[in-house]
Amino acid sequence: MAAGPRRLLSPAHSAGPDSLKTLTLRLLPGAALIAATVALLSIPALAPLTTSLLPAYPLIGFLAGALLAWRFRRWRVLAATLSLAAAERTLAITLASHTPAASVVTAVAAAALPLNLTALALLPERGRQVFSWSLGLVAAEALAAALLAQPEAAPMATVLARSLGEGRLSVIGMLGFSCALALAAVRLLMRPQALECGMFWALIGAMIAFSVATPTSASIALAGAGLVLLVSLVETSHAIAYGDELTGLPSRRALTETLAGLDGVYTIAMVDIDHFKTFNDTYGHDAGDQLLRMIGARLAKVGGGGRPFRYGGEEFAVIFSDTALDDALPHLETLRHSIESTGFGLRGSDRTRRANNDAPRVTRPSRRVSVSVSIGAAEAGRRAAPAHEVLAAADAALYRAKRGGRNRVCT
Image 1 (cartoon, helix red, strand yellow):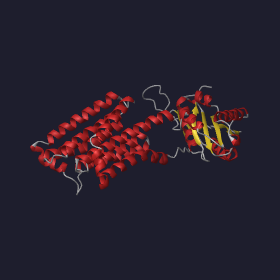
Image 2: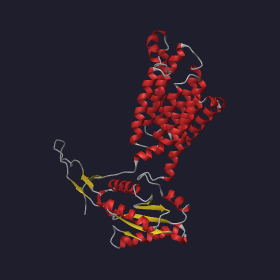
Image 3: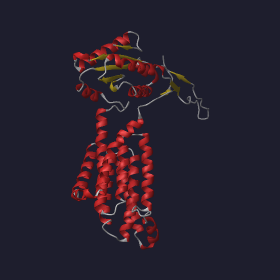
Image 4: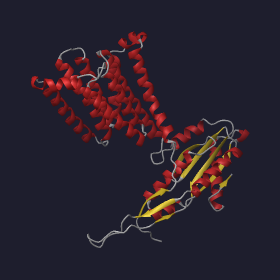
């Protein structure tokens, strides 16, 4: 039966993965690196170590970050790393000088760097566009610095380069970093990804660099910001290799490695969406993707310490380490019931096709679509069965569930 155009399927009571926990985990590496940077700059006993790190630490950090970003074709990270390196060289010169012109250049750089990093965070991952915008911004900022350094602009330059209170960060720099950090915080709340977290902490590190008094301290702070970007790039690459982009769950590669490390008593469950092909054919692949994301979100909240994985297609796996089958079954049944009872609003296209440009468009009514899953589970037990055998047994139980009428849990 042919179906008319449909919009994406949206759960009426969607409950995604624990985004706060995800965000916290993503923020931890950058937080640790920035905390280490602050310790290097503020603890007197570490001063000899800080001095010994120069000039190798910034040079190696920026070079490694740039090469890794180029190798992975992450043009925004490459441009951001180069921007941090340029800021490090700028502060190495201006902080060693005490002329009015150097103060103006420092103030302009304090406003330019957060602007550049914010623009890079918002640009798409296209090399030509990233570098065109970056070069344009740098040229405009260099022109602004040159104009402010002119004698005629001295009153304005004095105001912009003035520090707040006893701090060393200029007024214009404080404004730039405040706006950039606010936008970065909103962005990482909306997309708690490693690169967004990396950009946020890189801004913190850069702000510290413009708040210190010596070129050595500024170099260490900016090198720390560059290291944050490098680590976030590694995290992103790991997520691509071991995560499923659509559902956000670990991928089959991660499942394979987890299976290899299982020991003792454990339970494996296989979960399959009932009639998924029919659903896809009827409502379209976009709706099918939305359904997969919803199922992934439900699986991410499974109880009993279960760890979900995207197995492939419409199939998922859940591993309950150190858990007997009888203890895992109530959580699997709760999962099955949660998916069955979830309401979906499958909306028609917002407007019907018009016979001419002046005819009004009519909104189609929405309706509910029910979805269920079949689950098969097996345990290793005391006989210490190999993980691939337990997985095969869970898969066989899954097929028994489907043959038995679907929307049930079989062992």
